[in-house]
Length: 219
Image (cartoon, rainbow, N blue to C red; front, top):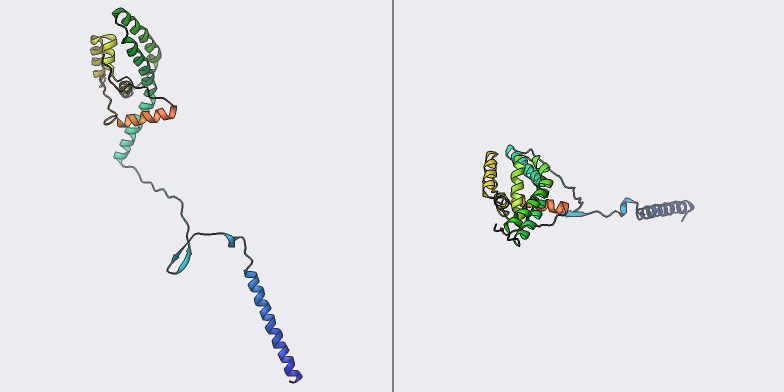
């Protein structure tokens, strides 16, 4: 082999090893992971391709309320407000009246009964006269329903027992002119189910215990 041929062979070998060295550097460079290379992503396989998958946040879509929906919402909010305003009064009155019923069951003397009723009546007047005068007619109706819930008797029967039948009829007549009724029923399973739900809501919010009497008291 001549010197020229030998020199050419050496150049080819040098170029070959240089290319191997460059290839090795590229391979080593690929094995060094960057910050983003170590992040694990969810993926799905679609038609043989692995595609990154992401879960989008919850998207809320609202629409305008119809006239009937606005009317129902206003009706519900009015009732909810009335329950929140009147339930504390009904609960307090229920505690006093239930205590009265239990005490009167053991009093047989008419004069003693009247004396006891008058004492409790003064307490009711003191605690409720001013606040109740600020209630609307609608809130008054809700209050009478709630008193029925707490005591097991409607307001007509309560007044009849404590003040007499004539007074009860008089109050009933006055209530009639205000488009109301002292004999407000309470049925938590049917027409008053929403009120019952709201009462439970108030009880949970303010920590009230349920003290109502579910059985009607025979007066």
